[in-house]
Image (cartoon, rainbow, N blue to C red; front, side, top):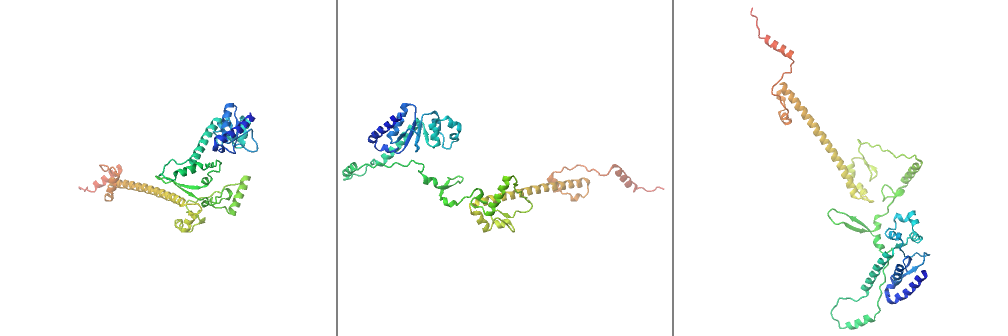
Length: 380
């Protein structure tokens, strides 16, 4: 069977060089490995490969084939998977595959079913033919009549046709576009703004033990030594993370951007040029400073709101206490001129219609007796 295919490839190759012309070079230098049980399907795939200038291999050798065409049931599934699919490295799945497909996966060779291969082959050849016809054919737009048109037509007929060079199909194609870095700026209500920048503009990024307090800064020797000691203690099980005692009453005068303790008011320090330059360099944008400032303003607004609520509650309690005192003064009839009538009206304190004495019944009786004895006189 393999000898028949090789003979067919050589014979079809000679015949295709005469008939198809430029199509023989479209798969030139590419080898394919076939594992198809159906004889008719195998012959169809082999003819399409040979007519396009390709070669058919018997088995894997030193050089990897460009593609493996198989009609196995697993080939229909594998052609839909991506290269980094975890199912390709699953041991159970590899054991269920035939040896040819398993070898193709280990060598990272494409696997296609006959139906998909023929479909892709037809579209690939049609694109190449259109590209060739668009470059070599004469223009269909007629211009002004020219006297020397017949001579130019004769020259065109006698001139040899230039076959366009096939474009690259390797993985390196479009490498320049892939390496271009860009920044996307999203603005509400507007189209996103995409700006291409050079890779050197980002500088060097540090990660792991080499990074300092920022990914754009390299860790100094003291920080690296400290991390190494902490890692050794972690491996021994003796590492304890430091616990920072936060003192809420004392103001936080340490600036993380300048890495120093501020003497005086911190707000004045944040308005200085030294602090702003530190914030805007090494990848830290003014957005970060704006976020910090907004957070502080939000906390300050919350504190002021709590103070206002407490003050209004205290004022209400004071007014209620005063209104109660005024009501007592009015009911007992003492210091009536000091009663706050506007407060009583505002708080809607209910007033009693008649006044009641605070004296006990016994004291009230003694008071009546005393007042009546003062007007008596002796008849004798």
